[in-house]
Length: 540
Image 1 (cartoon, rainbow, N blue to C red):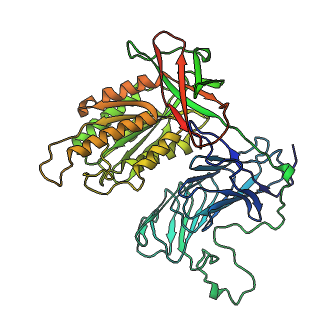
Image 2: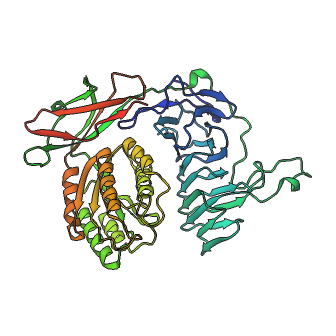
């Protein structure tokens, strides 16, 4: 235990953690981890996801061309902390950086300063505090409830941009952009190879071009600053704190937890009905044949966060009416303590409703669902849904995605139109790492191909098979829906199946990370009971 003065810079450490069925992305002996003037250096796998969440202070991020992340935190306030408030978890292709507020320190503000590799897919989330980002990674999603968001682009940006503030204003010096009532901005700079999404409830959003890495977001160029010996502070970025102090090696908290979590649905092999009322002592868990000790257990009655993901590509008004009715049946059948969210997609995903227990609000939003334009980008939408669950889940609730689609992403050969940016193989890897369950409802939309421009039978088969593989990889169930009129009944079967899901967690006795496949087997001490879920993971 140690006490901190009112203003300090935290030197951070890498916390190795296991998500369900996937070990840490880097071995402790190979993950570079050294203190630098900017904070702690963390090796970063190119193209991975980076999520930064700070509900208790500002986030100042800068994109650079190094292949690692640096992180430091500055604490300002009148009280002291008993331990570092920063948690860093390096999961497979996902680096999480978050702030943990201590209940006894309500007056503290904690600012995160981060440098991000250009290849990162970054998310930055705050509450009432500000976000500043200089440069553009491969993709970036910035979300703040009440804080201002400031983005500075290099002189040659190549980005597809969408910025929205519900009650705040969006201002920009970008060329060729469109605004709506000063609250929405859309722009495509260059070919739009990178993506930027900025959302705020009430904060102001500012976007500007900067000519040089150290140019300021207030539009003042370096040559205009030459006559001043006092450097200017970028607009929206707090001035640096002059009395910060590095924490010594003894102050750093190291965490090494390797926990694998499984979500298993238990059914009776004779009746195919779910088995409820099981206890931890009814389960035995084996990895590569060796029995493991179950450390955590959640019964089938534990609450879920459920995300409905609905394909609206090519849907007519009559079809949408049936889809809305089926989604409402799902809401009515779900347990009252399960939170439900809804995402629709065609060319891009739309968050119809965040996770909520408010059934009336949820029904109103579902009833407002309309048709959507664009080609089917199923893989991007599924990735979006997984990200929403990751950032919205509270109190460690169990999570599940319920995906309805014909599976015809434009990436499949023989399907007309643009496909997802995310490759199918990358989506499967993301699903494999997902801390939850994925159910897929494949809707049969096959028709006779009368010309080479029509979707070919092989493409329909591929869509079917990939929807099944997503469910198998995600540890859920695959449902075939031959007619749209049968969709509501399929949703109700998913709800019944979710009521039989148990969650088990264990720490593997084999702690080596050799990249090999680890087979998992779960047995249930009940006659004819079969556990259904993920079958293993790669120990990367």
